[in-house]
Structure formats: structure tokens, C-alpha cells
Length: 170
Image (cartoon, rainbow, N blue to C red; front, side):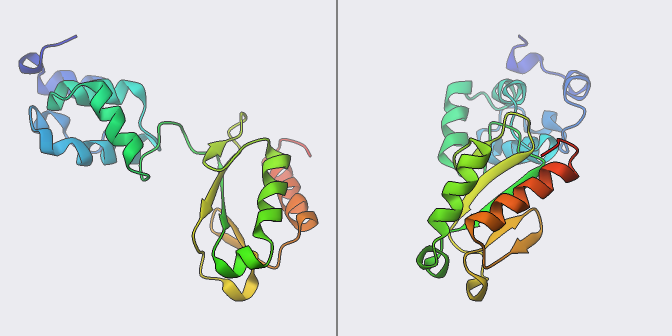
């Protein structure tokens, strides 16, 4: 590993050319941690271990402390998101209208819990406080599409359609 003072602009660009910021500008700046983590996540869709190690070298903060920051803030992810992001609303209207049954159906069908991604990388499930579609409750969003007035049967059909669309069979 390079010592902090040995990191050169060319080394950083060769190793992490995908980063959307010039990491070398932040060498030794502890306050740059959050912007660097945001940049890594924006670049890769999550924060890979190699980026954490490199950021640790740049800002002089141990990787273990950086992991602590990442796990503290819900905006950061340590694993890639699935191709299809399912956001299930658990706001008051959805909760009263059986969003828990929809969530159970999704978790049973996909064999994942909230904030997890299927092994095939096709779906990531997130529970959110409100999607702002109370009159359509219970509601889920899959990517940018909103689906309302759901039943367990309807969500099963939706998941099947997304699987078929992505060429994974049904």
C-alpha cells in the first residue's frame, strides 16, 4: 500500500479512473469523507471495498471508521442495487390497506427481506415511509412506475412480468 504522502495524481487516476472527482485533491482532508463516499456510490451504484480502502488512504481515516460512517447513513450502500428497485409504501393509508400482505408476498416470492437484493441481481426491495399515492393504497413503485390498489395476486403477476421482461423466465 502507498503511504498517504506517496499517493500521486497519476496513481489515483490510473486506479480509479471512473471516480467522478479527482481524488488526489482530497489527500489528507478528513472532512472530504462524505463527498468521496457520495462520489464512489454515484460512480459504482454502491461503495465497493476497494473504494473504501482507497478513500481511507486519501483522507487518512481507517477503513473500519469509514465502514461505520457508511452503515450509519442510510444513503450509502455496500452492495449493488438490483436492476429493478421495488419500493413498497408503508405509510398510514397503505398500512391500513394491507401493505404488510403485499410486503409478505414480495418477500416470499423473491426470497429477500427489505433492503436486500435477489441473488440474480434482478430486484432490490426497499420499504419507504410514503410514496404520496394514498388514494391508490396499497402502492409499490418498481423503478419509476407506480402500481396501486394491489393485492397479493396482483403483485405476484407484476413480479412475473418483470422477470419475463428481463429474460429470466417466469
